[in-house]
Length: 421
Ligand SMILES: Nc1nc2c(ncn2[C@@H]2O[C@H](COP(=O)(O)OP(=O)(O)OP(=O)(O)O)[C@@H](O)[C@H]2O)c(=O)[nH]1
Ligand SMILES: [Mg+2]
Image 1 (cartoon, rainbow, N blue to C red):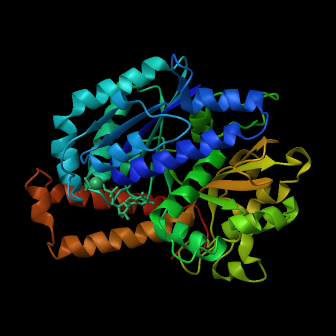
Image 2 (image 1 turned 120 degrees about the vertical axis):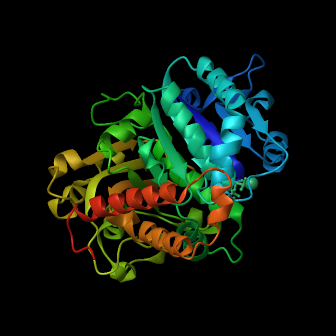
Image 3 (image 1 turned 90 degrees about the vertical axis):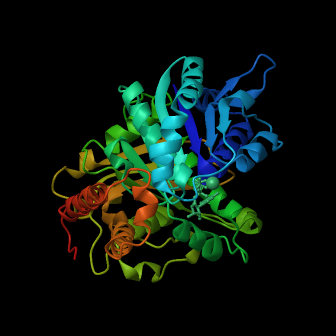
């Protein structure tokens, strides 16, 4: 089954490019006929000339990034006719994107999506990729997400956002990644002295690829799973108030050290579990090589509603994952055997001999979400910038509804249990 990626705004288009690059290069490495066929069907179609063409729609109100994407030499291609841009961006204004630019260009954007859908023999669903800070990504992105939901009610819709916010009402799930966390991975783990946006995008693409590349699920009877977005949603986000998914992955190794590093599954999994479960003491006794900062409210233990563990590489079938089924990690709403899903693929991913990736529907995103709401509320309370939104038809009541909606999400996650403040 295939995924149609909709790249929105500068961030969405830059991350989208890295994602396709990551996946294409991963497929080309080694002889992996079944794996590569499954992956290519998922992300690419082949042109009459045999070129691999991304199943993507490129949308930006500015021309620059799309122009760069279309002209960048890669072994795969974007289709020129599958892009749409205007002359000027939305100036970081959600209301301009959602109320004006989205509706004004809705027909042309929908036609582009429909053409990609018609190319898919079997459609798994849509992956809109966007930032939630920019006007095109957030505003046009929300508009497009809404239209996708209306036009394809039965398809899965998983948004990848570079900052958590409230499109969750429409999507089946939001895969959230935060620039500052990924920046930390680049600086501390990959040991990059000057972290660029390109480095950040490569790490984000690595995380996404590690989840979306083909894998064997518990019920797939040795055949690569068919419906990646559907399976992701069904194992992690079946409740409408709980749709925020965080991703962490081990290891992250600087490229020059790759050849000399050996990792063992029990150590990797222990660290990943520690990252998921523990609080500020995470770094204690753990090699920086495999550690990322956990995300939770201070003083709390991170309770998960559901987790998906994806293992790729050597010896995956003999690896014990029982520790991830520990009842102490989960709310008491679901028994751990239902709350934990494990996907495996013996094919090494993105040059790493072994990779363990955790997609978690847990309280991990409460802290950044809480931070965003507080900041937004302070701006709202001081009436800063409101006129930039009201001139496009977004009322104070709309703001209040949005605050209430996000507060509800925070409250729901708080109710999962644990010691949340
Ligand atoms: N990780 C990552 N973040 C990015 C990238 N490009 C922009 N951002 C972040 O996204 C936010 C701005 O969003 P953009 O994507 O530039 O905005 P846009 O969607 O093009 O919207 P307008 O320019 O307002 O029309 C800022 O927080 C940037 O730091 C990128 O390539 N990668
Ligand atoms: Mg822009």
